Image 1: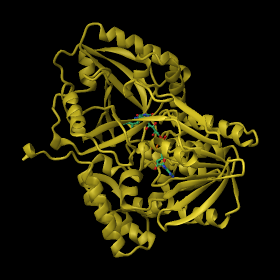
Image 2: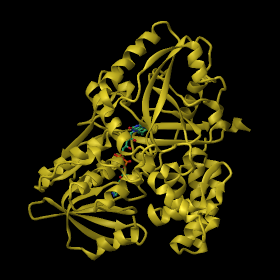
Image 3: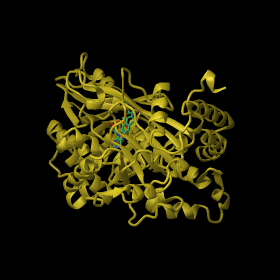
Length: 529
Ligand SMILES: Cc1cc2nc3c(=O)[nH]c(=O)nc-3n(C[C@H](O)[C@H](O)[C@H](O)COP(=O)(O)OP(=O)(O)OC[C@H]3O[C@@H](n4cnc5c(N)ncnc54)[C@H](O)[C@@H]3O)c2cc1C
């Protein structure tokens, strides 16, 4: 996964006609690149920023059927997602794990009610189920989640879903696509299209962000997988595109592990605003989320509002014995959901179905939007099936159902340091042997991350900035924003060596990262003192 080579290949072949050009390096675009390349198509993917910089690093980290969609009666979505959950667990067992969830019950009817619901969930998962749900007593519930507030607690219902590391999976998908022959590049933005005499798309104008260089890539088909920016891409194609997405912001707060002891996650099916609330253990911290707030404009760095942070603190305090306060928040991150709609809708964002949608413009632009991380593979299959039709490409069957994803390692021990590299772990361990023992140094006392990971990320995972490393190659920014700021100088030093950059670059990187990370801390109020 060498960016310089990828870029050279792209620029050295200006007349190359790609079968598929994909715009956007989030879950949807990267999935499409894996699908297209593994079917044997000449595939190019460009990402304007870093892979998963947008929504795909800001999820709740669940590979799930969606209990909420079951409650909404959206059975086809749940069925599809449960199937995909099972496939992803098989194809990326180094990153996706089986997570036990407990729904605490406080009314007499809730135990039997949720138990029946979760049995239906199990049945729908069929052979790809992760474990049988069951109703448990108050004592069993408290033994699984010792710091659950026991006031009014009657018992609980256990069920199982998947949990993963979203941006690590994105990097592994990029690697998988490249291994199947795709050209995949970050920091290259699509800035326009070229069309033939019949006004059909035949190329994408690209801007290499680091050098400001522009060039054209010619393609038989073009897939718009730009997430919340799909409308901007459609606007480059046609003057008045129909509205294809509505945006909704979801916020998570991250707390110390002591707020959620034990290995189980909590699922609250109905908060005061009618949403589902999760408290999930992740990388030795606790993630609590999420919210659902309609927003107008797309952004790569959305920010949580004060109300959203208060809502999450208040809602979690209702269930946890130890009430979290603003000062306990280690990090707060927001993401924008690109919800697929046709011609606008009057529905509230939380009620818009999460099904994906594919449209084709008159000039042949294939836009894919909506969906979930969990079903990225199916979305990709549908998008590339459409590309075959639109571009008259040779018929090749999709092969991703049982395609191992880069890093694939069976029986991964999620307690081991470096486990999230899967099969690559041994190579990182070898890096710290003679002659580079200093690479074994820990980057920060609060995290297990070592210096070798920085060098690895530059050499093999296309990390270009301190943020790329601290936010998406490892998850420090999302797990503890203050600690991540303290790590920035050390990371900048190693990256500067690897990328042959000078001290100005280092200083600039450290300052930019610190400014960014400040936005991951809850804003202080005058009353905070
Ligand atoms: C708060 C929240 C929680 C969620 N939790 C879950 C969950 O637990 N499980 C689950 O399955 N799903 C979850 N989702 C949904 C899931 O995260 C999204 O469906 C998925 O990440 C969307 O991926 P995407 O590739 O479509 O968009 P993105 O990840 O946003 O990717 C689009 C990319 O396109 C790039 N781009 C835009 N314009 C250009 C251009 N001109 N040139 C080049 N590149 C461009 C952007 O930089 C961006 O990286 C959650 C979503 C949110 C918001």
